[in-house]
Structure formats: structure tokens, C-alpha cells
Amino acid sequence: MPAELSPIDKAKSAAAKRAVGFVQDGMRVGLGTGSTAAWMVKALGERVRDEGLRIKGVPTSTRTADLAREEGIEVVTLDEAKWLDLTIDGTDEFDSNLNLIKGGGGALLQEKIVATASDQMIVIADAGKEVSQLGAFPLPIEVIRFGWQTTKALIEELLVSLDVLGQTTTLRMNRTEPYLTDEGNYILDLHLQRIGNARQLALVLNQVPGVVENGLFIDICDIVIIGHGDGKVELRDINAGSVANERVEFAENENVFADLGD
Ligand code: 5RP
Image (tube, rainbow, N blue to C red; front, side):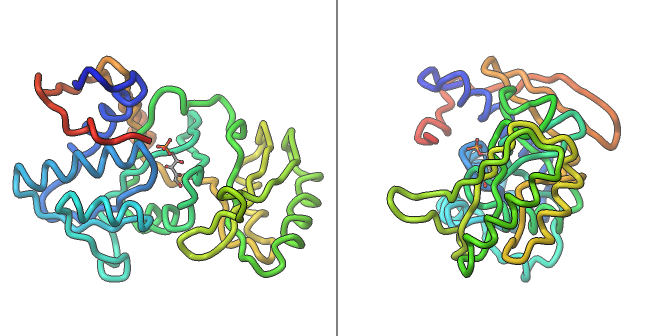
């Protein structure tokens, strides 16, 4: 394990490294977005180069597509792959049912489409992403630009009648301009603090005209791999109801992650 990495980066890299152990020759793999997912793309690239692993990767953002190509992973579109064996992605929060809040990195739409089109979704995370109840992390909602202020007002009106603690919504910014997703949409961040009924919220948000998708991933994740700074990983499989504790070994001089920041 490289000495210069922070404990959180070691945790992310350990989870990522364990997750790519699920990838087998010939698989079509969904590639998530974000700093944890970037460790995974690096680790997968290493397997492609070292073992001659033949896989097709479907990235969930232009950022991930660029990184995957740099790593020598064959990149195809979801329409070319049609269906995926496995998707590996990060998360902003996960609860005990492996329901998630995603979209902190702005890629929730492609991430949800890709994960839903996969036989299995594995989420990789450091322990800080685990919550007893979703909602402390602001919930991202992708909305089309046309009439976004009306969409925002409709969402705020809706929140009044729902089991959430906070109701503030903010337009995500990129310095002085609204943040644009890969699809050219805006993102509203909902500061809910606590979500009482995530399943209901996910359903009703998508009924609002102008909403493209929300960042709640309900019943999509199958396995979460929680990494720790000392190389330990915990694997929780929601379908098998199993928990396994393992350790990821890093070669003495291994430095594959050293060039990755957030
Ligand atoms: C991007 C995402 C990311 O998976 C999520 O934001 C976690 O990112 P990181 O691994 O950098 O903490 O949903 O849209």
C-alpha cells in the first residue's frame, strides 16, 4: 500500500481492488463515476494489462470514459453492450438495505441507467458512507433546463407533504455558472437531512414534470464493499444475507494509485 495515501484513499483503493476481483474474462462491466470509482477503473486497467483480461467497459460519464481508455480498457456504449454482467460504482450514502444516495459527482442519470441494466451492482465505499437513515447528504435531482425554477418550486411544494426533515433546494453551481450534466441538464440538490420513506420519495420525485431522474437507488445495489485504511474490507451481500471480512494485499512497491487524487 503506497505510504503517501491518506487513510480514506487507502480505504477507497482497498474496496476498489477487492471489487475488481469479481470481474471475469469476457464480462461487460459498468464503470461508475467519482473518486472511489476512479480507483476501481485503475485497478481494472491493471488486470487488463497484467492478466490479458478481455472485458468491455460501459462508462457512466465522459470522465470515466477518458480514464478507462487511458487504462487500456475497451470502452463501448450501453447500446452496444445491451446488457451488463456487473456494474461497480461508488456512492454518497448507503443504508442497511443497501439503498443509496448517488449523484454527488453529477453522473446519477447514466449511473442509474447502467446499474439497472446490470445483473449485479457492486458499490464500493469507505466506512464514512454508511448511514442509519438516508438524507444527510443532499439528494441530487437531475432536471431539464427549461422551466427549472418551476420544477424547483413544484419539488419544494411536494416536499411539504413528505416525510423529510429539511426542504431547502439549491441549484448546483460550477463556479458562477449552473453545473451541467453530461446530458446538458441541471442538478438540484435537496437538503432533506433525513428521508423517512426513500422508496416513496424516489417514486414521487420522478412524477414531477421537468425531473429527469433522482439520486435515490432503491433495490439496485446487490453488494457493498466497505474498505478500511488498513486494507481490511467488509463485503455485505443483501441477496445472500451474508457478511464477509477479508484483507486486500498490496505489493510492497505497489504504487498504482499514487497519481489519483479526488
Ligand atoms: C457520482 C456518484 C459517486 O459515486 C458519488 O458521488 C461518490 O463519489 P466519491 O467516490 O468521489 O465519494 O454518484 O455521480
